[in-house]
Length: 517
Ligand code: KIV
Ligand code: ZN
Image 1 (spheres, rainbow, N blue to C red):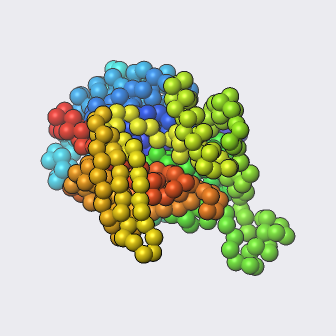
Image 2 (cartoon, rainbow, N blue to C red; image 1 turned 90 degrees about the vertical axis):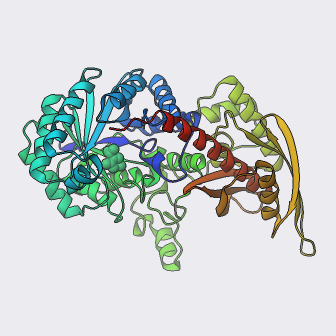
Image 3 (cartoon, rainbow, N blue to C red; image 1 turned 180 degrees about the horizontal axis):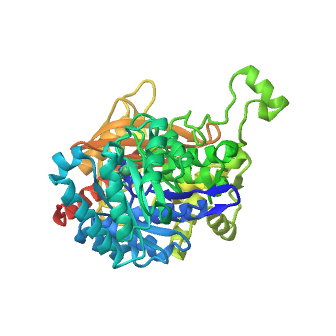
């Protein structure tokens, strides 16, 4: 693995698995495929494509990614039981480089309260399930869930056992984001010094961000000698999320002098990856988010602006271009033909079939009639989301509003092929259309968040709207862009309702097929 003095760090991306566990981040198969294509362009070493036993949808997505994405290892997650492992194998087996990632918790807290198992039984289970997984594929990753709250002697025993059973990667998750950097550094060093056979496998870490230390802990682990880090785009993931891929990669890149380590990541694809994920999930990053936030390269204070104008390095430790943030990527316009459009789609990483290109081109033409300058982000907003088998389709929006009238809307929505219409008033035009759509879809979900921002430019830009709805404790975010923000709002709401519908049907299927250990 060593390249001269520079150590190569494998990037294991779990945006499609742990990332998808973020509230409201569920994606359908075609959206997952789009993101997986971009992850491959970004240069990740491993894509954890999903948790195949979790639902039919998850299984199909992992299988589709395994079938299509070449040159990247494709992992499927499985609890340490035969059903999960066989299901994961059945999905990843189509990959050139399949990986079964099996996990079980090793901490006493989990053993006592969740698994109700003794340490001895846990050890047997971990070892036997790694052997079982090994009967299907060569590359097996074993994760000791809640490793950082596990007794070190027991953890080392389990790691030795699974290595002897055939694990090729052993992952040390800080499942609850409990570790601190110096402590985690010692923890990893300890494991590396004590476990027999550790040099024959890849040691990995998977850090959660509950204390905001996910990236710092991952970097500490790299200094302690791990060969792989698990992370997600924009740091999305369970609860406070996972370590952010872009932050780890750029820390290694900018501070080579400290870390002496490199990744295979093409850093100029970072920003697009972040944007694509945002477009698909509707979950934006905060403006001050490192690397990919709106303000990450904005210099506001006069003294800073003056310094940057004189010499960029006064206040910039990396260029925006290094992470793929160009300011001059104005691309297409009203007169661009299908050929140019198709080339642009390909350069942005979209591999669409003829019918999808045709559909996207129709939307592009409609947009270019309303808007002179079409940016990459506009194209993402047209094609990133895919809407297969949608139950509801917005067909018509009309609103009367102004400073002297009560806003009144009229909407038409296609429901399973039948056109329905309704009208409503509201506090403002957006409220009025949402109320009217709500009368048609008759959902129990309530709107708990609404955000609108412009996709580049000024008043002529597309309004990019995110709406978050909540039902039975589940939050789902819908998103849409349009030059008319009222239309964008109605579409975003319908998008959220469709996602909720898909989520509920997947949940039903997953409950039907649930297997408890
Ligand atoms: O956080 C965690 O422990 C996990 C494991 C499944 C790796 O996500
Ligand atoms: Zn996790």
